Image (cartoon, rainbow, N blue to C red; front, side):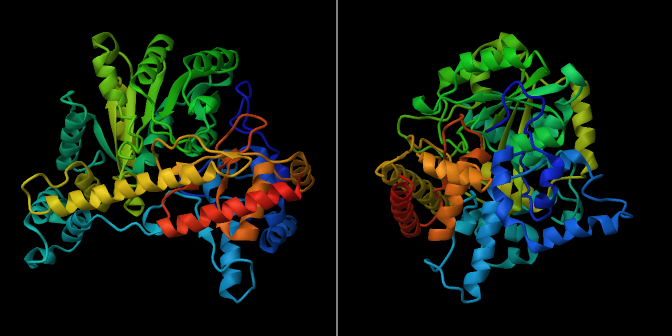
Length: 540
């Protein structure tokens, strides 16, 4: 179970007791502090290499850096999406390659929102622009359309030495920051957007981590508290743990389509003020892992709450293109804030984030993103730019990819028709797969999935019999980790236990991506259905 609001740290666990286990784990690029139960469940996965390292620890006491004296915040940073389940899946894949006999012939990895790894094809225009920027000799090729060449030329003219291999300004290439501002202004129906408030980042994660680094301060009861939704995307608990801040949970209402309740915010904020200094409120919209889309009234309530309680707002909006329900619409926090009038728009401090990794492009590997900063103190803004300068700049190829997202082909341009067809095909397929996943999961006895309004995941609630819970406890596992491990070992399906994202005590979930090709998704869903039926029968 996630740390309660009254705890001092994001997650609680015995460092020494789990040290050996952590030696065998790899952590992802968006690390996470996961509740003790989630990781204790991996006890059976301790490799001989890790055990050997632990035995050798005494013989290597002369090492300057060891597991006992390393940075404890790094040691506490964990990531369920690439945690023990995924490590086990990799081991099973190797066994299959070596000829091992299993009840299945392949591992289906549905643990992470990596669109291209799941088979989604790149958007042609984006790859053309990046290719031209990377290898300018291609400008002479008639295979590349004029509008792609025009965009690539404009980007290269802004690069030192007209080369994508040069550093950019720490805030990002000026032409791309201008394009981001135009995109945001158009998206928000004319709400003004200033390029000086736009920062190009290494994916959204880099921006979120950077802003939280600015916000965390104080000691004891004055240590910065950060409010995050439960369930949450594990980046947040990771960064909170890494920076030794205080995690303040607020629970989304599963029985009401994962709605955000202002009373829930108020209750947990007041409780947290007894032991820390709440300063930050994080919102994920559309939700990950929950897939809900917040309506305008909900966003207004959040902004009013932040205004009244003097909280800094972080709006994670990376799934803003991924809206599948006809009854839902994406409302940016920036636009709603502006429409609430100058009392709010000139006061509430807000940073919003976007990325090339999601939406219809799915370009995770380019690590492109941006953040828009609203109402930041000018002196703090100068410190932000200093902090960004330490890492020099975000990857310039990723900046170029981000530019295509915010500056796509326009009507009348050579690439517009193909680009539009490709974009709509991706979004249509995702909507169909969201519908399919929801429908099939809801036919399974002992399982319920809320309406998938947006994003790229299903997060069904699963019933786990008491007999199975007892067996999980006997194995030192959280119940949903035990469930997901059995699912992997019996079907080859790799999903992430709900305790890696947080959930109300006594409830169990798993997260699966809907990005798989339709036929493979159908196989996954059918296998989950058969497994769950057998699981309930076995542990009845």
